[in-house]
Length: 342
Image (cartoon, rainbow, N blue to C red; front, side):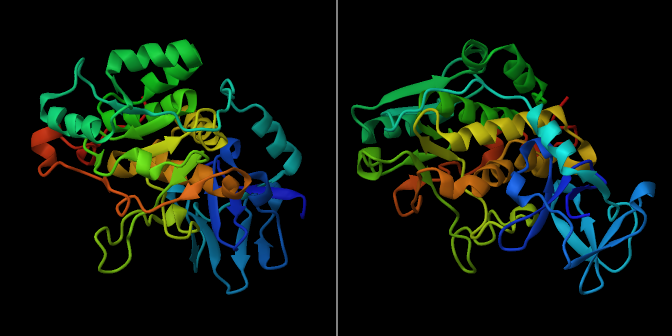
């Protein structure tokens, strides 16, 4: 059994991080060294030939695959506690068939350009002051606003029809999810700084970004009593110390491997979107295109590629200048009950 992996009720593969935390994800996005194979600490219960295998920990509790990718331990077993053993050869075969984007030429310096996106042809009036302040505090930097049509043209030009088709499969009612996906595609191709329309920096980027920086990562100040207490601590990424990596800003060189991995994972989740697994509304966005998949794609390869952590808030980045989200944006995607992917 040692050369066998385990497929969950959701069709995902069981994984275990280096610190012993279990989770599950699509085979296409799994980090091979973390794919779990049977060990003496977990008892395989049932007949694998009948595909009724269950996994029991030393505590006597059964492993239970939860929607989104987390693993719970429960006293009794039923559907979510069922695992199907498969050979690692099958795992490698399926991973080899995953969609691969065109690898971009990698730069080693972050260009002085700021990217923001919106649905209208021009910068929305409600954000003109915010954009003006961004440009004033960053003299000498280029600024690009990407409308919906310009995003379509960009994706088709640099990534082709298959990636554009995946982008268009994202339900247009989830504009935030489309903006998520585009920011990764944009910075992977162009490099620079992406910020949400509601965000800005109040200290020049020239004071933050060093000549040798290639990727900047930040996490929420989410401890008890802090400004963002509880932010970014979803159960499916509880194996990441400190919680999710913020992606309301993406600051990187073009061609960075972190973004290649993020894009590949999102393409897999769009292709295999399953409502019981990823759900809808806010959680659906977090899981399919947002900070959960972003963080889960970067963490396994974190130590393989150059990056630097910084504190976004202390470095002058403002998460939101919006006081009333509904008045500014209208209906929030957290209120949606339609599928994230069509």
